[in-house]
Length: 91
Image (cartoon, rainbow, N blue to C red; front, side):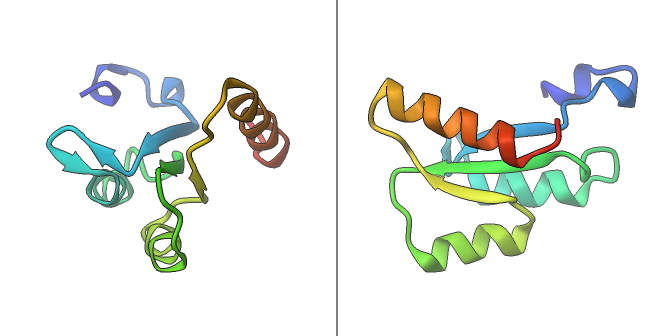
């Protein structure tokens, strides 16, 4: 619903960070829907999860996520993840 508020496609975000567990859906469903929509498929997606299995990571990559990251447990770790994301992605 948030993305639908944008009137000008050029104003859409270039990156979204989502959780693997969302209210009423999953991160995989969200990602699949996003990548199937022509207007939104250019948006980079990073998934945060409480667990990090190779199978899950592969699944999200197949759906179009650019990364799958285990959720940091401290504020400092979140800051490191944010810095790492900004250095790897041309935003």
